[in-house]
Image (cartoon, rainbow, N blue to C red):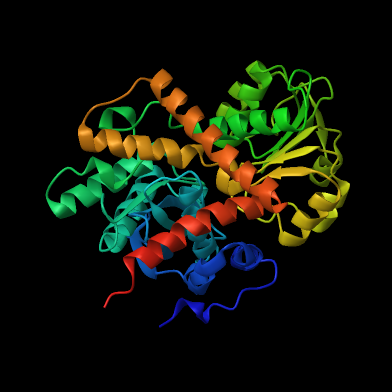
Length: 422
C-alpha cells in the first residue's frame, strides 16, 4: 500500500515537509520528474511492543520505524520516546533526515523511529524491556548496512547500548555499527554528545559573520535545554554572547544580563530542567517569544514558531536546533521581516555528522581524538553551509529552500542514476 495514504493536518510535521518540497521543485530542473519520490517514504513499519511491567501487568506500546529514502546509502536517523509520537511525525522526521544527510553530503538515506510512551513513567527495568522488544521488532529492517538508529528525544547512550546488544544477540555477532550514539567503551565516538549543539554554534557563527552580527555581547534565547540547547548555549557563551533566556518543559527563566551557565547546568542535571534555577526571573512561557534577543535558538520540538510568534520575535537570527520548529507561514513571516533563518536540515546536522564518524570508526576499529572529531565536523559544516549560501545567492531564495535544493538534487540524481528495479 502506498504511504501517500496519510492525509496530513495543516500544521502537522508531514504537511510542513510537503510544503517545503513544493517550494524546491522549481529549482530541480530535469530532476523534477522524480519529485514524487520525495513525497513518499520508501518503507514504514508499525510494531506492537508488549512488555511485562514491574507490577505484573502486560502493557502494549506502539512503535515505528520509517525509511524515507535510501538512494544514497543506508537509512540514518534517531529514535524518540515521547507520548505524542505518531506515524505522521516519524514520516516527517525521516524525510528531514534524508534532506539533512544529503545537505552535508553524508553517504546515508533518511530514517527515523519512535515509540509512543512517556519514559518518565517507566522504571529502568521497564525501559530496558521496552527498548529490547522494540529493537527485536524492527530488527528485520535495521543493520549496519541497512538502517542505523541513534539517540533522539528522551533516548540516550544507554538505550543505544541495549539496542546494539539486542541486535547483536539476534544476529549472533557483536555489531557495534548498528547504532550510533553508544557509550564510548562500546564503540561510541568522542564528541558525539555535544555534536548537534556544536553544529548549531558553527553554523550560527558563520551566519552571524554574514549579517555582521558580533557574537561578543550578542543576546541569545534558547528554547529546549537538553543536549542540543545547552551545548550550543555553552559555546555561544564562550564566544562572548549572553544567554538571556532559557525555556524547557519545566518553565522559562530570564536574566537580561545573562544566565550564569556554570550555576545553571548543575541545576539542570540535578532537577531535569531550568525551572528550578533560582538566580533568574521566572516568566510566563509565552513571554519567551517577546524577549529582546539577537539570536533565537529553538531546540525543543517541531512546530514551535507559529506565524504569530514569528511576528513578535525581536531576533535577527534564528538557528533551528530542533527538527521542524518553524511552520511554513512563520517561515514566510520571518523572511518578510528580514530575519535570517538557518534551517534545521543544516543547522542541527552536527549530530548525524559525528554519528557518521562513529559508524566509520566502528567499521575500521580505529578511533579519533575529540580534537580530530571537532576539526572534521567544523570543516564539513562550514563547507556545506557555503555551498548552500552560494545556491541561495544565485537563485535569490531562502537558506531553507537552498538547502532543500542542494539536498534534493543529490537525492534525485542518485535515484535517476540507479534507475528503477525491476
